[in-house]
Structures are given as structure tokens and as C-alpha cells.
Length: 141
Image (tube, rainbow, N blue to C red; front, side, top):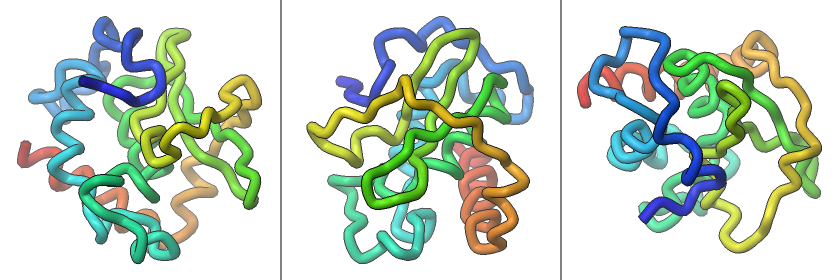
């Protein structure tokens, strides 16, 4: 059922925060996010390509920092061919990427990981507002 990178290793990762009591593990979070990710939460430059079939498109950084809020760990980035980074998480030594499905069959090189800064990412007011949207919607799930 789950196709995101690292899905087979996340069932034992538990929340460190009580902010989202309905989230039990990253699989549960993925299920809830599947109802939340939308065109609005997608990065503006990718919105024209967003669809329910490719619901993780443009959602990486805001989702990764939300994961960090809930489960702790670190947010890293994989360099992309076209520039920039694609964000993913490492929690308790387990590497996973809830938004990897946006790349289809393309395999990212997760060993090339670069720490990502919340402060740097959220210096974009637009991105910060999309992150707050995810947080608000998740509280309602």
C-alpha cells in the first residue's frame, strides 16, 4: 500500500510531541496527509502540475518540518538535477521521505544528504504559511 521511500522501516517511530495526538507513527501521518495535501499547500511554481494522483508534488520541505515537529530527528536535503534540494527525514537513524512518490520511478540519492535549516526555509513567508496550513489541517484530523 505505501510506496514512499523508507515506508517499511517507520512503523516503530513514535511521536515525541503531544501536539497531534491522532498521529501514531509516520504511516498514520501519511494517511492523514493524503487528505490534506492540496494545490494550495504545493509549492507555487509546481501548482499547475499538482493533482490528487501526484499529491506529494511540491510538499517536501513543509511536510519534512512538520514530521520533525511530531517525531523529532533531522531534516536533510538531496540535491536535485534542476537545482535546489528535496527534503526528507531521519528519525532515530531511520531515513524516510513521505513525499518521494512525486518522483515516480526516479530514485533519489539519499546518501547525498545536506542538513536543512527551518529558519532558512521559513524565511519565505509563502512557504511558512503553507506549513502553518498543514499544521492547522492536521489538528483537525
